Image 1 (cartoon, rainbow, N blue to C red):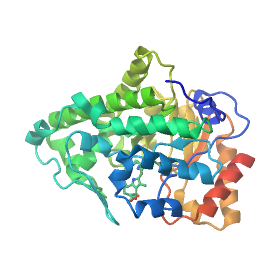
Image 2: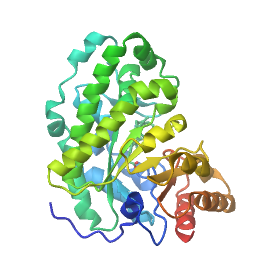
Image 3: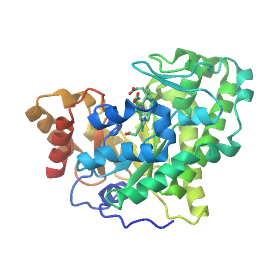
Image 4: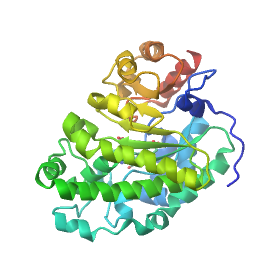
Length: 352
Ligand SMILES: Cc1c2[nH]c(c1CCC(=O)O)Cc1[nH]c(c(CCC(=O)O)c1C)Cc1[nH]c(c(CCC(=O)O)c1C)Cc1[nH]c(c(C)c1CCC(=O)O)C2
């Protein structure tokens, strides 16, 4: 596919470990409810209708890039489109979040999931949105594609929505280890196909969200998350090559997995995303210089008085340094953030 020439390649340069003239920054959940223009559009459309309508998904993806001097655009979608493509119902309920009314309850339910065979057909609307976004961006900044990681997706599929403890999903790991692995394998296959499709459609970097890693701890993570995370990077990179495309960087963000940073650094990704509970210098000491780090400002730092926010952003940059670093929050931005504070954060990073 032919796309407009990329004018700002700081994100991709940083991901590959190349020098940059200024530190790139993007923000997890940068398209969302803290923006009045998002709330306006969202008031007229259901959440998944926006995801499924390429023109709307692209409009929402572009909103933050129009408003702020960001160094990347992320395609608007959700990690839960994968369970949907496997035949599960997912609803986005106001002030509750995602609800899966018919969760997986017993190992027999696994056979009711649709096979991965036509995942690309079912999620073809994401590919369309990505291609359209690349054209509409006109090379302004690179476009990030993403997927949930298998354990995080399995969690939602068993819990039937978000959970503070993930105790139902974790019970599966202890009670039904083989069935758990069967689900994780099935999800891995779907995620691999899905990410390769996104790369073919024009995504320039792929981020994998293992948002529920903190619930696992080192031993469960080693068995039920890491092997699948590794498998995804290796199969996606090979798949992209087989399709005749150039390699694109991949990021793993395993929230709360500071106990597994060394393993994550060696899991085949170019970038490791960090949450705010680890010191940048400690993460760098554990990981070394072979991968780029991304993160990790406490999202709540955006509530701080503006001078303090600036100082926190400067301290973060001083600790990470300018090489092999992509600035971001340590998790997604909250819906009640002031857009002005986001602008202060972005400008402070760029001036550092
Ligand atoms: C766990 C997870 C989900 N979705 C996602 C994750 C991984 C990242 C993370 O750990 O936060 C990923 C996601 N979800 C969304 C994006 C869009 C791209 C971006 O701007 O980053 C991305 C990358 C849009 C969204 N996804 C959701 C919204 C808000 C829904 C709405 O408009 O009603 C948006 C903009 C809903 C969603 N979707 C999900 C939850 C738990 C919620 C409810 C929480 C909330 O309301 O913020 C599942």
